[in-house]
Every structure is written in structure tokens, then in C-alpha cells.
Length: 227
Image (tube, rainbow, N blue to C red; front, side, top):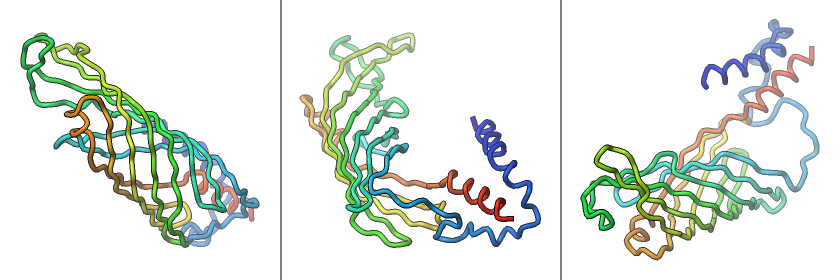
């Protein structure tokens, strides 16, 4: 996967770079907050599609939640809204416990999937910083599996859940194409099983590195065509 990614980057960049080998790299404007190429007039409503995820805590264990969200952003009001799809990137493995259904103590693993509606208002923004307060509410399910004597997994039980998530997020722009971000939130789980509700409700966090490959390509393309 990594080799294919770099091969794609070379295919995109090399044709544009070759005519501009004599142009000083420092004059390309890569290390600025402003894009060095002309931009079309900004539209008020723009589509939003991005990978998303966080690390949440179930009991004393951390587990990665990955997903995708899509929606629309109102530039004038500074609000994004849409739908998100999330799931554990790996099954959550628990300490061995007694399973009433089979009358034995064994390992239990869990899967979790979630569909949410989100609203992400902008709290503060300047050239360097962006602060938002994402809110989401959705429904999903937790599926549990137990380990048999031969090591295979069999379905045990399933729980329907609702999730309310309140978050705060911040982003620091280094250049127009590079930014670092992070956030902290709390997830309130609603479920018929009180133990599962207590274990899954808790804090979550995320750390992000944003690199805009499209803006980099547009910069290379624009600078090479200026000659």
C-alpha cells in the first residue's frame, strides 16, 4: 500500500516538476499561510468528506474507533453538519470471564459499529488557529463473541446502543497545506445492559496530522507554468 501511494505521488508530481528545475525552490511559496496560486471565488456551501476517528476507553482499555464522515459546511456561519459512520478498527479483547450461556470461563471479544448525525460549529478562527465544538448523536450496536476450546470465535450476544458525543477540537496551521490538530470529548452510551453502558461511557481523544496533497500539487503546477 505504501509503495503504491508513493508511486502515485511520483506520477502526479514528476511531469509538473521537470520543466522547473532551474527555479529556486524557496520561491515556490510552500512555507506560507497563503496559497501561492490563484483561487476561485469561495462558495458559501462546500461539500465535506473526510476520514475521521478517535481513541475511546472501554473500562480500562483503549480502543481505536475509525470512520468516515460526509456533509456540508457553511463558510459564512462556520458550521458543518452531516452523517458519520464508525467502527472499531480491531476487536476489543477482554479479560477471561464467565459466560452464562455456555457455563464456562473464556475470552470475550467485542465489535462496535455506529451511525451518527453531527453538528460542528466554529468557536474561534484566525490565520493560525481553528477551534470547534463537535456534537453528534447516533445509534449502533455492540456484538460480543466468545472463544471456543479450539480457539475459534462464536457469536454470543448483541446490544443496541445510542451514543451522545460532546467534543472540543483545535487545529494549528503550520503552512497552508500542513496542520496539526487534536481534541478531547466524552461519550454517553445508552443501552439496556447497565454494565455495558457504564463501561462504554467515557472520555475519548484524537490527534491528527493534516497534509493537503491537492494544494501541494496545485502549487507545483502553478509555479512550473509561470515560466
